[in-house]
Image (cartoon, rainbow, N blue to C red; front, side, top):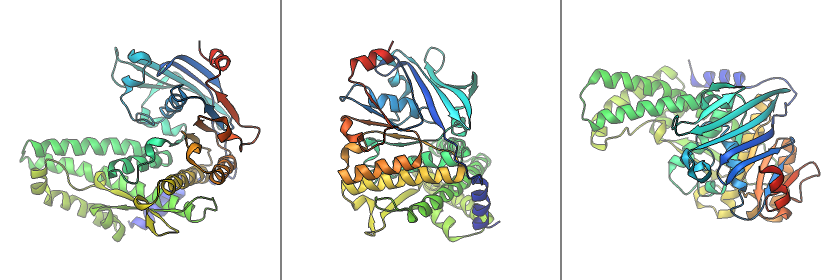
Length: 394
């Protein structure tokens, strides 16, 4: 089967042909022993919500708790025990999710006396955190991402994989299984093992999961690039491409069987070289996401800080719009301190884009004036307000 044909099939499978967009939103949030909150609860409508207040008051903590409604360790990507109140070793996060006129109770919790892994429940039944993308899509933009274009390739891959799995829920599981296989191969390399049978079996798994990861990354990449190309938003247009030895071969050949055979042979041929490295030198774990400012034909890594921020916003907006287009569901946006670094023109443009998305957006900022461009349906929650806090903390 050709790769182009395969992509056509999967794109059609992604797209839901109903014209109606279902508004998904979190109607309530309850925190227990989470970060600086011994307890916190709040109810929300489907419109944009801004948390404002001084640094350290707990604005980003609320966004982080919502980000744990997805696979992984949230927008800060820290150890779970660091999220518990006064390092108590346990926390609980509970939301009510409105989706397709249905309601789901979703909880995420940690109890180190029981397990080092967080537990996730949907309507009282345990599920794998990897399955959370079946219920909601959370798209994040935080200050930690501001240097993504000038840091190492690892963060760019993670950034894009988190985007990919909201479109293709199996992507998170494939990433997990692929990383497990790579770790097993690396252990063999470090042990100087000559067990050819074991190597062959592990490399078959690497090819299986690695190929699917590449297919899904390229599929989502094409969707986002097309969305950005047609965008009329007042933000610079980004062009994205994956590069790497295995990715370049994938791009140049349309035969899937040929590609898998090439992947397998290359892993075999690189065993000797990899023995010296003690690690696997080829595969999607070595790919890099290159981003270019299209209008200037300039690599994002060479752009100014403001241009890099605007490029990130451009990408995040394309993710949200594409998700709505191909699933007919509205995503949930987490925008941490995004408005504070934009000029007035860009603030107005971003406000308009968020309102036009008709998606629930959770935002943070120090000053309420950052959000005055939103319409009357939006909500500002001032966490410096002692009355507001006492009403929500207990």
